[in-house]
Length: 271
Image 1 (cartoon, rainbow, N blue to C red):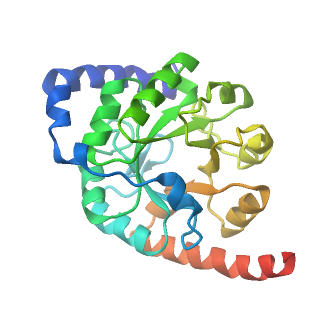
Image 2 (cartoon, helix red, strand yellow; image 1 turned 90 degrees about the horizontal axis):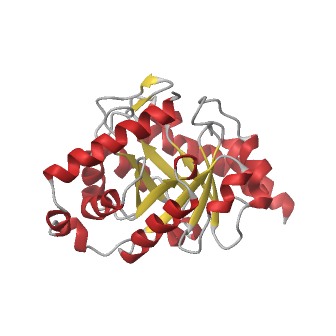
């Protein structure tokens, strides 16, 4: 059993436990459920922002602890102030050290879209995401079939949540449906945790043009952002590179400055 299989098996147990503790009716009664949501698409396309979805992640199955003591509110507010187009907040406890509390703290501190980063396998989790204050949910093609993707995406749209479909190979793009707003290429193989940004570049022309296209994971150099933008990508999800620092928000601000410094002469030459 690979790591993804272990995560999904545990997630099924976790969802069953959550359903036994909190009913859908109780989730729908929470304050976060009725709030107006922010659009990831709109924020990614906003020229005043960076196109970066900055991630808050405490632990990685492949890298171990990243930053267990960080404040979700403080770090994510710093990300947003430095130009993050959106935030990705891990809510998986067992493998990534996340929690719903981290997402709710991020929501209270920010007015930008928040992606609930988790392994979504049941519509109950989507209702949970809405009640926590998320604006976007993640569907991972690697662990869902086409029918499951379509059904979960439809549920999300009915709750005014946007949908990010994450793929790692060309065949997974067949799982796209019109209810999906953004398609992301995960440069990390979830079965082996090997990483290559070339995965994004290889898949770009095969991705549905109706959706916004983003690159995820393994991005640690400002030059890579410029390369991916030139290839046509409209967004970039980055987490570990910032979270390994004692002050992730400061590292993010410095990274944004590096991207701008490279872009300025590059795009002047192109124009």
